Image (cartoon, rainbow, N blue to C red):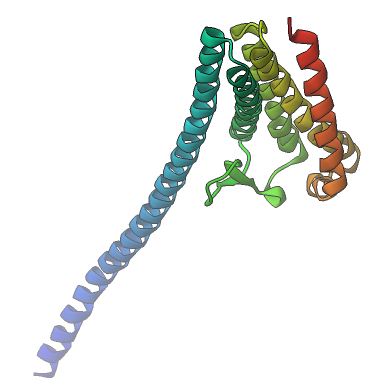
Length: 233
């Protein structure tokens, strides 16, 4: 009887030895699947947020350009002073909007190209992402930053070639685009210059205060005004 009991216990133990690894493997698989699922959901969520942000910004850019086109057509057809004034205003808005959006999109492309670490913004606004300074190198910061300037320059070149400056409104469009580029350059280029020496991007960016922004704003206005006066027939 005792022998039979021992054999029974041995059989149960053997069964447990077989079942336990299976249960452990099953648990590991379920945990891995859960992690993969969460990672996938995070990627989908980030992708959805990015698509939403870029979609909204694209609509804003299209709206600004459409308002300018409508005012420009009204001014061309009627020759009214009111239409001409509205054309200038919408031209300024469109020039600034398009150049700024392309500038920011190229910042994002620079971040992607450099394989940098960033988080897609959770709030709707101008910026598409949050830069992870502690996880990125200075070289990655330079690539991201310079890409924005390249994008702004391309936007300016596009508007210069796509729209002839044969009226006040169209000249204002181009002048505002160049002024917007000048504003970004006045803010960002000194940061890059000082970062080249300090190797601390966040510390240099933290030095951008109201004084820097005000000076850059004045530079942008003067640049845009001078360019507009130079371009207008």
